[in-house]
Structure formats: C-alpha cells, structure tokens
Length: 283
Image 1 (cartoon, rainbow, N blue to C red):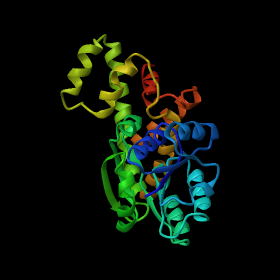
Image 2: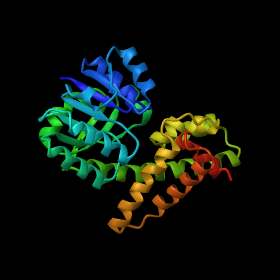
Image 3: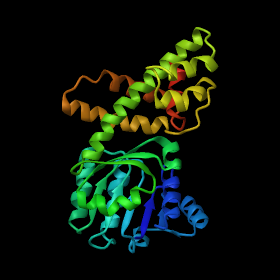
Image 4: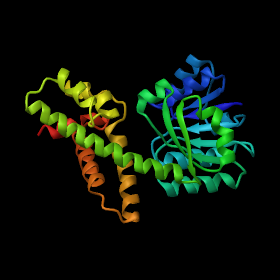
C-alpha cells in the first residue's frame, strides 16, 4: 500500500513519521512547500508539488485547517487518483463539508472517510490518537492499516458525516473542561495554593482529566507552547455553534468558550496553546 499525506502541522508531521515507520509513506505535501521539502528529505519520500504527485497513492490522508482546504484538496485529488483509492480526512470541518466531499469523490469511484481525531499533538507523536470515523465499513477496512499507524482507538461512528458529528460532541466537552480547569486553577493561584500539592491532589479525585494532567503545570508557569492552538479551537467552536443551533440544544458552554477563545485570538494568542485561557480567568 502507498500512502500520501497532505498537511504537515503539529498533527500531520508526526502522523507522516508513523506512516514511514510502517513502510506506507510515499509522498507528503503542504501549503508551505519548504516544510514539505524538509520532511520529505528527512524521511526519504517524495515532496509533492501538486495533486498529480499523489496519483500513484492508494490512500491520501488530509490533515489541514479549514473546510475550504479540504474541498480544494479533494477536488484536485479527484482528478488524479485511481478508481478504488481512498481519501481520509483527519481535519475538523462541518458535517455538510464532509458529505459534500464524499459525494464529489464518489463521482470518480474514490472512497472517502471523514475521520477527525482527538488526543492533541502528544497523541499524534505517540501514535495514541482516538479516531472517529464516518463512511462505509469497506472504506474503513481499506484505510485501517494507515489509520492504525497513529491511532490507539478507531471507531466507526456511521455514514459520511458521522465522524465530524462526533468531533463536534468531543469539542463541546473539551472546551467545557478547558473552561473549568483554567477557572479552577486561576482560583487556586488567588488562594495561594501550592501547585506541587494542588495538581496531584486534583488528579487523584473526581476532578482528574486529560487537560489538567497535560496542561496544568505548564499553564501555571504561563507556558503556552501549542499542543492545540487557540485559533484552531475557535474555528472548531464556530462549527459546533452552527451544529448546536441546528440541533436546538441549549449551548451556554459552547457560546462562552467561543467568546473566550475569540478574545484570546484578538489579544494575540491565536498561536498559543488553548491553556492560555487561564490568562483571561486570572482577571
């Protein structure tokens, strides 16, 4: 099997390395050509300069930022991939975009999986991502050797769009946890509690969670090297807000988190880790 990967950011680059370790990686591409050239040279694979450079791939993985990026890449790949090949999208986009791409590729007999991930940059580096998949069971079986290279859990959630729907639920919970953890730790600072005692105590009880464990100590030191950028969280939350409106649910947590991350981006924290939220909670 030959696999290509487009999008070499904090998630995509380590995914590419895992694919190389499995002997699957043939080509890599990126909006910034220099980044593709550098990683291709490091891994001994092809640096793509257009969709045509993926024409011999059985599977092409997308890990890009925006709906328009997914649509543009899919349209280009539709013209060059062989019938029976597969595109796997690990980006976070809207459900309608996922379904639109699936239909576009199906016209060329190319399968598609919307397969957003959770686990952050650490999960990508460690090959421990949780992958939520929409599409056919047959497409998933074709893509499983690729996804398995960097996933701890692969769950087939249903038809096209179901992966992105699941990611919306995931991001509501993640955003809510971020709000609570940052607010709680800001309170702990104001109360003069020792972080060396506070963090393990919280982790040992019902307050324990991934964000507190992975980001608690660094945010208390005001270190906000991304993991997951504030700007990306804001983009995801705006997608989730639209889903919530269409669903008719009460969306207090979503709306507060979206407002907070919009403020962080306005303050120049767009490229900071989402744990920079504590800077707002400190008042």
